[in-house]
Length: 115
Image (cartoon, rainbow, N blue to C red; front, side):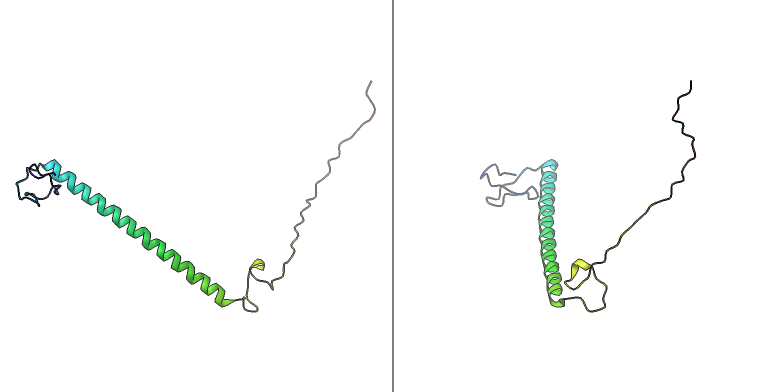
């Protein structure tokens, strides 16, 4: 709320101007609006802080994973691994062949026309 004497912007929760000390006439609606605005600002700041923390956590987790991946090197011998994940892996060719037996129907077939 702006002071009527000095035009200083004051929060709605104070009864006197913070600059000149003049009494401020506040309504319940003005106080409510100021409190709602304050909560919205605090919520936005908290959301931004959480987003920054999540980003830092993700970067640290990625760096740790990459460090472990590079430190380990190749997979130990005898370990199960994906063929495309290591240089020494051999590819196995798997062929699927499915030919179901189809029973032949015995249907007479005449090439001659009936008169």
